[in-house]
Each structure stands twice: as C-alpha cells, then as structure tokens.
Image (cartoon, rainbow, N blue to C red; front, top):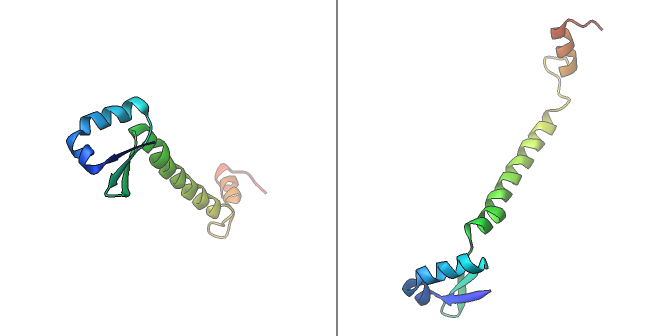
Length: 90
C-alpha cells in the first residue's frame, strides 16, 4: 500500500488519482507522521460500504418480517383470515 503526504496530494492530485485507478490499491494519506485518510476506488467504496449498508437494511427488514410472523389480526391468525376470505370452512 502506497503512502503519500498531504502536500503531494495538493500538488499532484491528478497523478495520485491516476495511480489509484491503475493499481486499484488503497492509498494512505499522511499529514506529518500520522495517516489521516485513505483513498480508495469507487468500486472498493461500493463493495465495502454501500453493499454493507444494503445488507444491514435487508437484515432489519427480515427481522421486522420475522417479528410480525404468527401475530393474530383481530383475534384470528392470518391463515384463518385468508381461509375466511376465500370462503373455506373449518
């Protein structure tokens, strides 16, 4: 993984971005002696963050669906309601 300092980013941003695109490897950005940021490709960002957010949202929705399973509506289960709507007798 390559490390560049903030001054190099400021003076040669285009070259740093070209290098990022070419190597597809994250670039550490330092200021002084500390790493302050990481540059990653849009594909890495999508894979690491956007896909994870979508997965978390999916998990929240599944949990909500699971929590609603088996609950009675107006004293009847959903199966009883469907049977009544379809005209089935017990």
